[in-house]
Image (cartoon, rainbow, N blue to C red; front, side, top):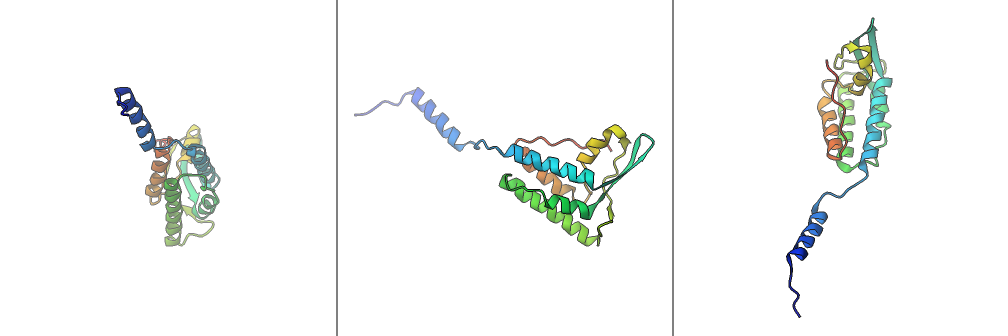
Length: 156
């Protein structure tokens, strides 16, 4: 016995197939958001901020302390592309500090953010050395692919 395939059956089969081929919904966002928050906290805790009057004069980072802090962040619950980017980010910081013969108390030259004191939270969110920024951008890209919007950099 033959059964006719109707347009409705084809439409349902198409939707089922499209659902199977589309990217599965995951719960990666809380894990990535936690990592980003911990990174922000590590940056703020390892920063050396010079304030003159009501203005941020400069921000520098104790790179060795920062690397130690970001290495402690657990990324096991994050998707593989983010974990890979994070690992590369940590390796980039390690290579940078090794090349500079950085010590525990060495201040790392980072983007010299200037602005009002009220800009400090955004500034600390974006602490990044010039030579590690491309590695961090790969982490941001992996986060965005999982649906996490990262904060835009503060004005320099």
